[in-house]
Image 1 (tube, one colour):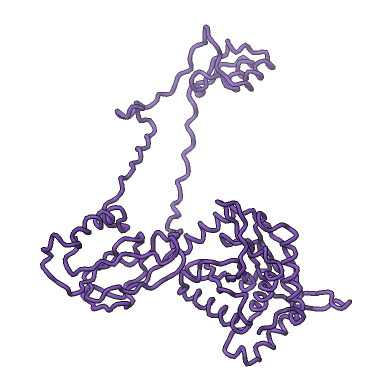
Image 2 (cartoon, helix red, strand yellow):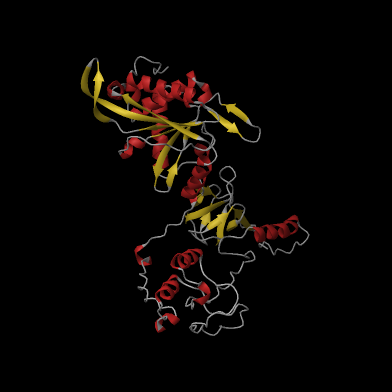
Length: 453
C-alpha cells in the first residue's frame, strides 16, 4: 500500500488497444523534482516512440521499471511524493478502501521481471539413451546379440524386398540364419544362404558406426535481435494481412520524363520555398486523383458485418523505413489539401518517422498507402497491404531506359508502378483502371487535375 502523499503513475494506453510498451529511457531519477506535464520518460509502443508527461507535481519517490523493461498497460511505473504528507492513519478514508483493488490489479499485471509470476510449466526431463522407462534408473547397456539359432517354427522376420530377393534366388527363408537386430533376416543373409556360405563372425553384431565429427559451435558468430516494439507489431500485422486478404499485384512501366521536368519547375515556385519537392509528391497527387475517380479503391473489409466500407476521405499512408522498423504514418484528409500543403505534410511526416517520433495518432486510420521502394534502388515489388486497407502502391526507382517516344527510340526517365489490392474488395478491372490512371497522370502531369487551389 502506498504511503499518504505518494502517487503512482500507471502506464497509459497511448494508442488504440496497446497492451504493453518498453521503457526506453528515464529523464528523472529518485529525488528529482517534477512538475505537471514535465516529460519523465520515453517509451516505445508497438507503433511508435512516445514521451510520457507526469500527471503529478512533487518529488520522484521511486522508479518501478528499469530502462529496457517491457511493461504492461495499467502497471505502475513511477511513484511521486506530492508533498501532501501525513501519517497515513486515516484507515476509513477512500484512499485506503481503494488500495485493495489496486493491489489486486498489480498482481494481475506485474511488470516484466517484477512481482508474482504465473504458474510456470515444467518441461518433463528428456529421457537419456539407455534410461529405464519407469525413470527408476538407467537400464543396463544392451549387449550385442549373438546370432540366434535357426528358427524351428513361427514366422520369419524380414522386409518385403528381402522376401522377394529370397524368392528370386530360390532361398527358403526358414533355413536362413538371421543376423539382423531382433532376429531380422537381412539381404546379406539371403545372399550368403544362396552362395552356401556361413555367416561371418563379425556379422553377429552390427558394426559400430564411425565416430561422428565433433559439432562446431558457431553461436559466437551469431547475433540474436529481440523482436519487439514497432518491428514486432509490423511483423504480426504483415503476417495477418498476407494470410487474411487475398492479394493481387499488377505492374505498369511508365515514362515519367515530364514528371521529372514538372518537379524541377515546382521547386522554383515561391509556394514551395523551404519545402522538399520530389517525384513522390506527384505520385501522391496522382493516386489521390485516381481515388477521386474510382472511390471503391479507398475502402476496407468489415469481416464481422460482411460489408465493404467505402471511405469518403483519404488518409494517405507513406511507408517509412526507420531504425526501429517499417512504420506507416498517414496524412489525414490528404484529398483536401492543396499541393504545397501536401508537400509540407509529406516532408514533416517522413522526417518525424525517421526520427522515431511518430505519434500513435499518425499511425492509425490510414485508408490507402504508397511505399517508395525506388529510394533503395529497387525497380518493383509486390507490397503487402497495410491491414485494413484495400490497396497499396509501390513506386520504383526512376531509370534512364530506351523508350519509344514520338515514333523514335530515345533514352527516357522510366519507372515501374506496382499496385497490390485486396481481391475481396477490388476486382481486376478496378485495380487496372486505378493503376492505368496513375500512370497516365505521371506521363502527362500537366494534362490532368494536379493543380492546387
